[in-house]
Image (cartoon, rainbow, N blue to C red; front, side):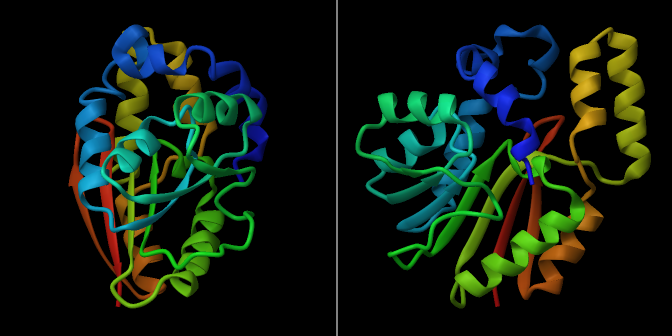
Length: 212
């Protein structure tokens, strides 16, 4: 459920912001238009937001600056420390997509960026089922993450990255649980969401799901 990557997150916490700013050539395309991606998620969000995979707090900062109430969930201690240093007013808890403290507020939006791929497809299904129970009618899930149109596109991307010599990125794409829009579409619809997808860069799709 993503917890197997915590050690990696802790190590990455010191350089994550440099990576998303385009400081690592291998990941430049992955984080292309990063600020726009965050702003798109913020603009699609409601007033009371549950954020998974807070990381160093980049999305949280933008949500809070818009006057939204934010409850953050982040499994990495290193990331939590960074996020709280940036956003001392943030309500932030140790947890992950599947295991997090009971909420004392009614939320209208669940958000995440660059994190849902830490779950297997079965775990994604379990998570969305839980969120369907958590959200009321017209509540929303707004995720931005790497996904692929279909399995053949995923294979093509692996080959392209290999030819580019981006072996760290290739390992990432092969190790984590990046899925397809078809799988995601089925999961959201199965749990009573109407979902739409919008491509934001060569890797990242916006997933906006509204509870029916």
